Amino acid sequence: MNKRKREEEAGNSNSMEIVWQTPANPPEPQDYILRNGRRHVRPYYFEFISHVKNRWAGKTIVDLFAEEFKGRPYDYYVSAVKCGRIQVDGEIVPVSYIVKQSQKISHFLHRHEPPVMAHDVSVLQNELDVLTVCKPASVPVHPCGQYRKNTIVGILQAEYGLAPLFPIHRLDRLVSGLLILARNASKADFFRQQIEAGLVQKQYIAKVIGVFPEDGIMVDANIDYNAREGRSTAEVENANGAVKGKAASTKFTRISTDGTHSIVLCEPITGRTHQIRVHLQYTGHPIANDMLYLSEHVIGRSAGGMSADRAAANSGHSPEFIFHDNCPREENSRDDFSIDPMCTNCPNLAPKGYDGLEEGLWLHCFRYSGSGWTYECPYPDWASLPE
Image (tube, rainbow, N blue to C red; front, side):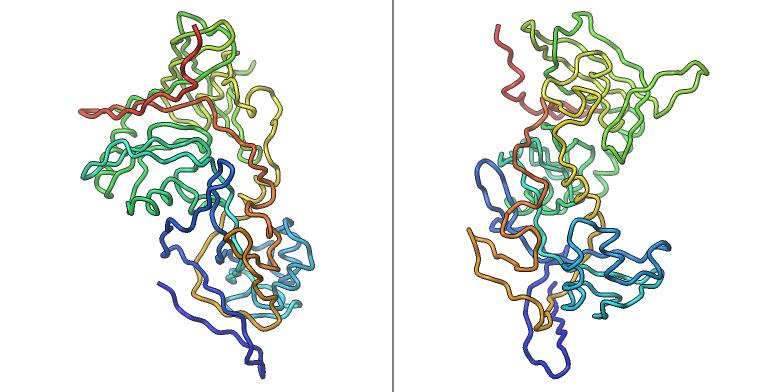
């Protein structure tokens, strides 16, 4: 639902009208731009909301943003406060305004979502209570961080009109394969209970480096996830018998090998962050294109993109909004999207930190099964090794 809100300087009747999207506005087919093998989202105006933390209280509104959100220059925040793109409790404030604990801060942005690979989200089964799809690599399952429309849930709503949907299991953004979505809350709860009770069998395939042992391997090694670095490590007992992380187990079975790579069946018993990827690294046979775990160092990961994800973690909603006259005007569109002169990402379509060189992992979910049900997804092309 859209509403109108007008903010005008005293004695100034000129204003800039911009339509702000809210979470109630569903994604639509025209929101997407396919270019050079990538699916982009046409930039749109959105309100990000946060609340003043204890350590923020007592700072000026401009200093708060300049110190806590360093992705934009100081002058940008000065201009954004002056023209009302940054507000406190729904009101325009001076640049010298001192924020107080728990106040609501709104940052109205020209939002650029990161691109994903432009593969179709193919529907496998469309039942009364269950939908299964083949998730392309690089597409997150649901809104998170900088992603809102460029998600499986968003694309299915835009292209098929399917909503609401309740994903019943996780797939990492760079992982492809079977994704099961319930069509209602009661069916989602049915799956959740089976998963929590350990009644669901999960099967993946991976393409790994080297000749994987013919007899297979059962890995029992704790997983310790470092949120700051965005990666996990496999942990074993130290000399004192202590071990970090959470218990994790994965069964691996070799399917085939060409002497350079192996195709491996992966059956996680538990469900920890990056579990299969870390346990394969632990065996000495990491996924062959997994740059995060091919070495002990994080390779090819965009620091700008990661910080942007964290900065965009708080999202909110806004009515249709009209700016003060001292805000720069929207300029002519370029390549079917509008250029905002205050936006630090324009005229680029993708946000800073995303160079479009990302590829999907050679890790694919192909089967989930439980009590009385089984859902499957075809193998990807990379799962066939030359004989």
